[in-house]
Length: 178
Image (cartoon, rainbow, N blue to C red; front, side):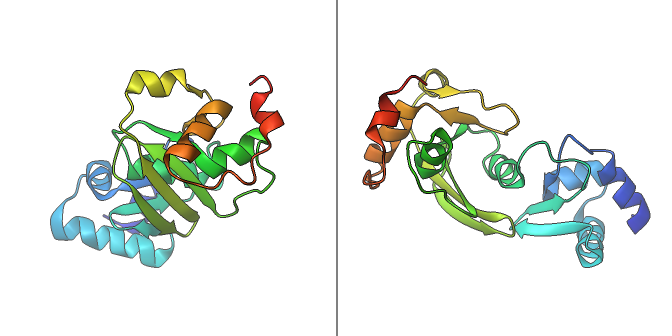
C-alpha cells in the first residue's frame, strides 16, 4: 500500500483507536505476509507509526487522544482481559498516597503478569484470578480513561495481596468516602 493511502486509512480511526496489533493492521490495510510487513516498515521509517513493543504499533494523531496513551497501550497489550488501574497508580489518583508515579502505570489484569517498557512509559501488569463480577463491584468508572479505577479499599487490598509497601498510604484518606 502506498504511504499516503496507508496514512489516510489510519487517520480514518481518528478519535477511536491509536494502538494497533499487527493482525489489526492486516485487516485495516487488507494486506498480509510480506506485503503487510513492508507497509508497516515503511510507515515506521516515515514516522507515521511508532513500534511500541513486539506486535504493537502506535499511530499518533495529534487531534485524537481523549484517553491517555499509556492506558490505551495497556488495554491493547491485554485485550480480551479484564483490566483496571490499581496499586500505586490508583493510590496516587485517589490521593491516598502522596507520591505520584511518573512514566509508569500499574494495571491489575485477569491476563498474564508482565512489564513492558514503551516509548510512553512503563506498563506493569499484576495478575488477579478474581471474577469479572468481583472486579466490577470493586472498581468505578473513570471518565476520560481506558480502564476502570479500583476503589480506595480495593487499592489497599491489591497492595497487600501483592506484598507491596503500605508505608506511604494515608489511612485517613482511605477511610473517607469514595
